[in-house]
Image (cartoon, rainbow, N blue to C red; front, side, top):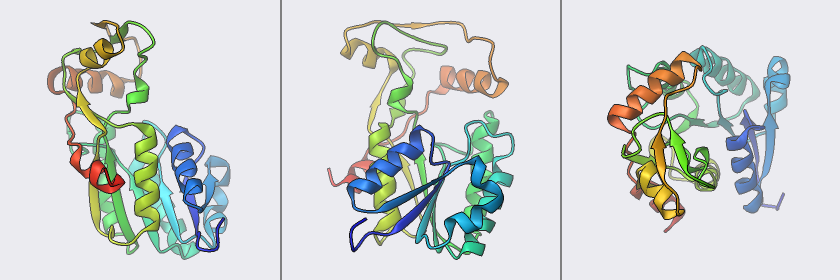
Length: 227
């Protein structure tokens, strides 16, 4: 860590998003402290001395508002003054329970008494396998604002460590495209397939994508990254 660097706790720091945030912080000379479920009983102690925290709930957590409330309480006990919450684009989508959980958690973050920023990334580009023909369980012509994972990590590092982002809610997308367009750019085709037997929240998410996609604008991320 450089002389000007700070310590940043990353709750959920061992997943792909957490790793991207850690790498971006390291490039800027800051010290990332990844925290997982093993640290949960002593979360406040683990975050002591951190100037900020990035909060990522486990994917499809059955009660994200409760998870976030516990993490926010630990931050308050530890004296962490600043939190950035990793939400999702279009959190208030009543058809999708896991989006609604994030909308409720956002409200808790805003009322936490901490200095807060909320990031709402679109679907990750990295979730699509473009190494061959692309198969997705929804309309291949649905429009998405896709977020590149490295871009999300960089945006998180910026709002965690720079001034001017307190009280802000930022939707994040690196580009707007359809799955068919992305596949064609990679020299492949895209096909819609039947959704596999999976978590019921994923099935309703695929149904939502099929009908509405998940559009997200790109200007906010471009502004944050100085592009």
